Image (cartoon, rainbow, N blue to C red):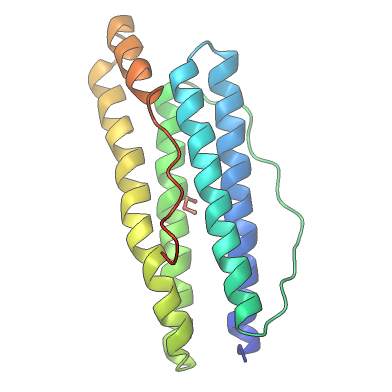
Length: 170
Ligand code: OFO
């Protein structure tokens, strides 16, 4: 049985992950509208990853006999100053998500909920990856600066990203 505080924190995290997927869809739409299709692809893949995260929290709450409670998802922004600004916003968002997960892990320790603490380890590792992938793109875009050819090359690379569902049981 989940402690009420943990159940609430996990439900809030479902909301945050749904917002993440919504945010990346908004970024995909922004990149499509500005003629940067590779980055739009990258963001669509990110959206799919976020929905996997949602489903992991959902199933965990159910498995622990908790009650999933879905709230309203906030509207994301629809416009960024530049491709770099959008990826910087993605990186800042992922850092925020990591901090949220660390707080839930702290709460699990406080309540001696080892099951939840163990469950969160997958997300703690995943967030290292999430931050790294966004940071890599930020660095490349900074290097390219206003060089259109550089941006074109980066976009070609972002177009190759594919969705890899997590292995069963992962
Ligand atoms: Fe769910 O990791 Fe991004 O937000």
